Image (tube, rainbow, N blue to C red; front, side):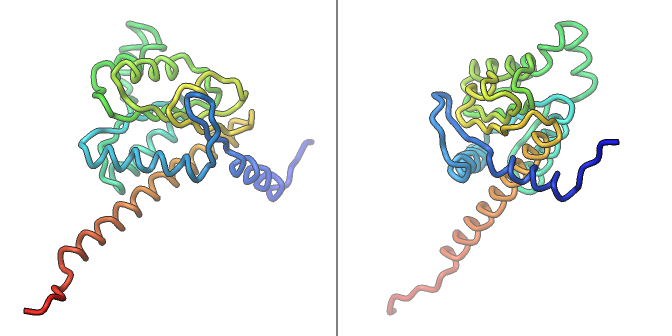
Length: 210
């Protein structure tokens, strides 16, 4: 019987998460902190200008996408949407093939300067790659989260790309979940900080002599 120790498993998970790579469409590498800040700025920029965040994923990645949607909408106050209604997914899959289930709603709903967050552990899911192409066609910005092989096509498809160097679904999905939590929490805290600064400026006493 094969067993493993929880502490060893969690240590490997921690190492994988800390090793997350970030790059742009040209393949230029960025630090994890710098890449995350770029995405936080995208999120807050979308909120400020009335744009939305679209998030897509399959299976476990859809669970990450749905949770991210909730956090962005509830905690950050930005319009966020996942195209995961069973009715629309099954209708599009039945009528046009599963590869279309995100592509077609993006064609319908996306506006220029919206943001697409595309999540795929393998980075090779057809419907995710087609979603990215659709978003590009609508002049959206794109953020990708992928894993498995370093040459997966999703890794070079976004303006900001997060790559988790593991072929274990559990590690990749947990890393993606933790990263989206961090992005939402950081956007929320920065928004609140900015709001406090504005309030302080408005209510600051006038130091000039009368």
